[in-house]
Image (cartoon, rainbow, N blue to C red):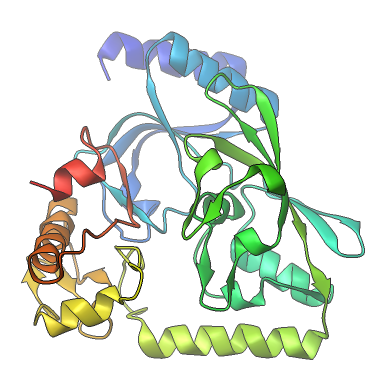
Length: 315
């Protein structure tokens, strides 16, 4: 960010008290990969009006901005992000019980906290998502799920900000809920989600949650930083199995490695760079295409890159 723009942005943030803000923040500290250079500013908006004002300021002054949840499926550039990273986890993190089987959840709530809340209140439908590292906003955009179900199964309504900071509400019937995506929510900012659940015994919910966590511990390389599965599962195939059959398990690029425990994961063994991870993603992408004629679709999302993920993979 040019010096005069940096100063004017810093002055604006100080003057308007839109939220907690920090300058020159290491994205490696805000992503599960522990990878990424510095963001020029990081802001936790206090409320909806603050968030809208901040986005309007960015648009008016042509400042890049990005919404970041837990950063669990984010690969941040080694060069950082020249703009404002906005996080909703500090002030948009409330859960409201509407009635017997419905809850309204703000986007910054941790999915794990929501699952515990539901368990404590005898509400079933989300326990199978235990262990997925995400905020509710991120989980909704990605339609986070497992074989037993996805968050989209429980959605009743989603409230978002559109590109012009207008409030929009999507009832479930207006949403195309697909595998790891809800089309209408892309390029929107999730504010809150209303979920319809069902009454379930607490011991049953606890059992499901613990089983899911144990399964993840056994099958996934949770002792290393990663973004989870780097590619979506194509119909009729498992990415990890294809990668393993291609003999790529354990392949390294500096400190990035295709996990020996689960070949659908690329892990950060120590001080991996984003370019190391992208090198291995390209390797998998091209080898799978050459051998299976399947074009893999990335699940990881980028922050701070000038090209989109598909352009980078096809090189």
